[in-house]
Image (cartoon, rainbow, N blue to C red; front, side, top):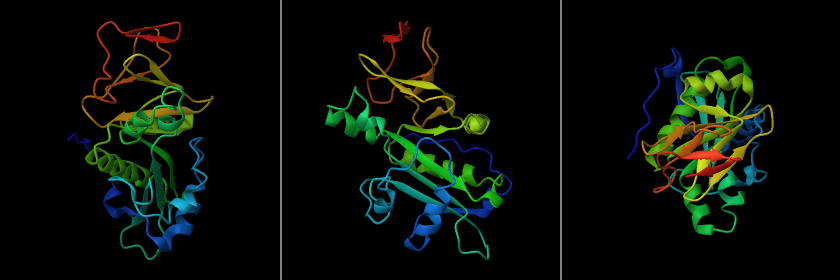
Length: 234
């Protein structure tokens, strides 16, 4: 099983407790997530998901992972950070997998999309978002996931790169006979991070952006792989 190497802790990170969302925090959790500006907006059924039993090894609510962050020994009962993650929409909707339920299922159990992460404004720059991301990555890797991904504004590029993410307007997932392009409208970017040693994020000649290989067993790139006219030639 792959492990995610921990980043050096933020000076205040030890004061943060990360835990699954509990029912008394539903309203505060949704209010926090309302602060996110990512285009990876929460699914419309999010409130319903919060009432469901977990449906997978990583899930805490329905098909989703819902985490909260609290400051240890704080006098306030409210969470100061929130994260919502689930299977990527492209694992179900991309044209290359839309009519292949078995492949869609495998991708939904292999890649995790962080739809929203938010910290209350007066508690930012204290390592809370970092702690939420690190906890999510460890949980995902332990459950057998091989990739985390999210969508973000350009002004957060340095933050995500410091945490080991690769960011670009277009990311391509290498498949055995094709490339699955994940493109965001400007100015937004996609960020990806490998959670398994078999997953590689590479730059290929002619590629419009980084290429992820090894997402599923056998999805590796042979030597000499390249892009021509926007198409992956393996």
